[in-house]
Image 1: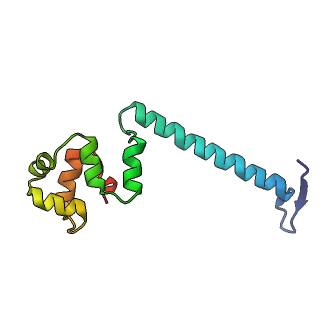
Image 2: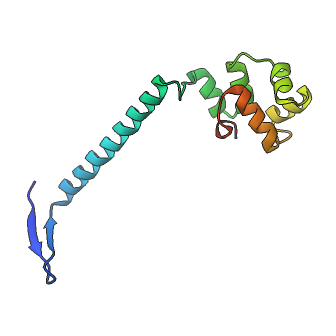
Amino acid sequence: MHEQIITTTGGERLVVIPEADYLAMLDAIEDREDIATIENFQRRLEAGEEELLPAEMANRILDGGSKIRVWREYRGLSARELAAGAQISTSYLSQIETGTREGGIVTLKRIAAILRVSIDDLV
Protein backbone atom coordinates (compact mmCIF):
# COMPACT_ATOMS: atom_id res chain seq x y z
CA MET A 1 0.00 0.00 0.00
CA HIS A 2 1.29 3.43 -0.91
CA GLU A 3 -0.12 6.08 1.39
CA GLN A 4 0.39 9.78 1.76
CA ILE A 5 -0.14 11.68 5.00
CA ILE A 6 -1.33 15.25 4.74
CA THR A 7 -2.17 17.79 7.40
CA THR A 8 -5.16 20.09 7.07
CA THR A 9 -5.01 23.76 7.95
CA GLY A 10 -6.78 22.82 11.21
CA GLY A 11 -3.98 20.39 12.10
CA GLU A 12 -5.91 17.20 11.38
CA ARG A 13 -3.75 14.46 9.87
CA LEU A 14 -5.28 12.56 6.97
CA VAL A 15 -4.08 9.44 5.20
CA VAL A 16 -4.57 9.34 1.43
CA ILE A 17 -4.39 5.92 -0.22
CA PRO A 18 -4.94 4.69 -3.76
CA GLU A 19 -8.55 3.83 -4.55
CA ALA A 20 -7.69 0.18 -5.25
CA ASP A 21 -6.22 -0.16 -1.75
CA TYR A 22 -9.29 1.51 -0.25
CA LEU A 23 -11.63 -0.88 -2.12
CA ALA A 24 -9.56 -3.87 -1.01
CA MET A 25 -9.89 -2.70 2.60
CA LEU A 26 -13.68 -2.42 2.22
CA ASP A 27 -13.83 -5.96 0.80
CA ALA A 28 -11.82 -7.26 3.76
CA ILE A 29 -14.20 -5.57 6.21
CA GLU A 30 -17.26 -7.00 4.45
CA ASP A 31 -15.64 -10.45 4.44
CA ARG A 32 -15.10 -10.23 8.22
CA GLU A 33 -18.72 -9.17 8.73
CA ASP A 34 -19.91 -12.08 6.58
CA ILE A 35 -17.73 -14.50 8.52
CA ALA A 36 -19.06 -13.16 11.83
CA THR A 37 -22.65 -13.57 10.60
CA ILE A 38 -21.97 -17.16 9.53
CA GLU A 39 -20.24 -17.97 12.84
CA ASN A 40 -23.17 -16.49 14.78
CA PHE A 41 -25.63 -18.59 12.77
CA GLN A 42 -23.53 -21.72 13.39
CA ARG A 43 -23.56 -21.07 17.15
CA ARG A 44 -27.34 -20.54 17.10
CA LEU A 45 -27.80 -23.70 15.02
CA GLU A 46 -25.72 -25.76 17.44
CA ALA A 47 -27.69 -24.32 20.38
CA GLY A 48 -30.96 -25.32 18.71
CA GLU A 49 -32.01 -21.68 18.22
CA GLU A 50 -31.94 -22.00 14.41
CA GLU A 51 -32.83 -24.80 12.06
CA LEU A 52 -32.18 -25.65 8.46
CA LEU A 53 -35.09 -26.20 6.12
CA PRO A 54 -34.37 -28.81 3.43
CA ALA A 55 -33.85 -27.36 -0.04
CA GLU A 56 -36.97 -29.09 -1.37
CA MET A 57 -39.11 -27.28 1.20
CA ALA A 58 -37.34 -23.95 0.77
CA ASN A 59 -37.76 -24.20 -3.00
CA ARG A 60 -41.49 -24.75 -2.61
CA ILE A 61 -41.70 -21.49 -0.65
CA LEU A 62 -39.50 -19.68 -3.18
CA ASP A 63 -41.75 -20.98 -5.96
CA GLY A 64 -44.74 -19.30 -4.28
CA GLY A 65 -46.05 -22.18 -2.20
CA SER A 66 -47.89 -21.54 1.05
CA LYS A 67 -45.38 -21.06 3.85
CA ILE A 68 -47.85 -22.45 6.37
CA ARG A 69 -48.51 -25.57 4.28
CA VAL A 70 -44.81 -26.14 3.68
CA TRP A 71 -43.98 -25.83 7.41
CA ARG A 72 -47.02 -27.92 8.35
CA GLU A 73 -45.96 -30.73 6.03
CA TYR A 74 -42.33 -30.43 7.13
CA ARG A 75 -43.47 -30.86 10.74
CA GLY A 76 -45.55 -33.88 9.72
CA LEU A 77 -48.88 -32.37 10.74
CA SER A 78 -52.17 -32.85 8.99
CA ALA A 79 -54.36 -29.85 8.26
CA ARG A 80 -56.82 -31.17 10.83
CA GLU A 81 -54.13 -31.37 13.54
CA LEU A 82 -52.85 -27.87 12.87
CA ALA A 83 -56.34 -26.38 12.69
CA ALA A 84 -57.34 -28.03 15.96
CA GLY A 85 -54.21 -26.76 17.69
CA ALA A 86 -54.79 -23.25 16.36
CA GLN A 87 -58.45 -23.41 17.41
CA ILE A 88 -59.74 -22.79 13.89
CA SER A 89 -61.68 -24.87 11.41
CA THR A 90 -59.90 -27.00 8.84
CA SER A 91 -61.65 -25.08 6.08
CA TYR A 92 -60.37 -21.75 7.47
CA LEU A 93 -56.84 -23.16 7.58
CA SER A 94 -57.26 -24.34 3.99
CA GLN A 95 -58.34 -20.85 2.95
CA ILE A 96 -55.29 -19.35 4.67
CA GLU A 97 -53.00 -21.87 3.01
CA THR A 98 -54.47 -21.25 -0.45
CA GLY A 99 -54.40 -17.48 0.02
CA THR A 100 -58.13 -16.97 -0.37
CA ARG A 101 -58.26 -15.56 3.18
CA GLU A 102 -55.71 -13.90 5.38
CA GLY A 103 -55.32 -15.20 8.88
CA GLY A 104 -55.71 -12.79 11.75
CA ILE A 105 -52.72 -12.00 13.93
CA VAL A 106 -53.94 -14.17 16.82
CA THR A 107 -54.51 -17.11 14.47
CA LEU A 108 -51.11 -16.67 12.83
CA LYS A 109 -49.43 -16.52 16.24
CA ARG A 110 -51.10 -19.78 17.23
CA ILE A 111 -50.10 -21.43 13.97
CA ALA A 112 -46.52 -20.19 14.32
CA ALA A 113 -46.32 -21.52 17.89
CA ILE A 114 -47.56 -24.96 16.83
CA LEU A 115 -45.15 -25.06 13.89
CA ARG A 116 -42.29 -23.83 16.16
CA VAL A 117 -41.42 -20.93 13.86
CA SER A 118 -41.64 -17.18 14.18
CA ILE A 119 -44.61 -15.39 12.72
CA ASP A 120 -42.10 -13.74 10.34
CA ASP A 121 -41.45 -17.18 8.85
CA LEU A 122 -45.12 -17.39 7.85
CA VAL A 123 -45.83 -13.96 6.41
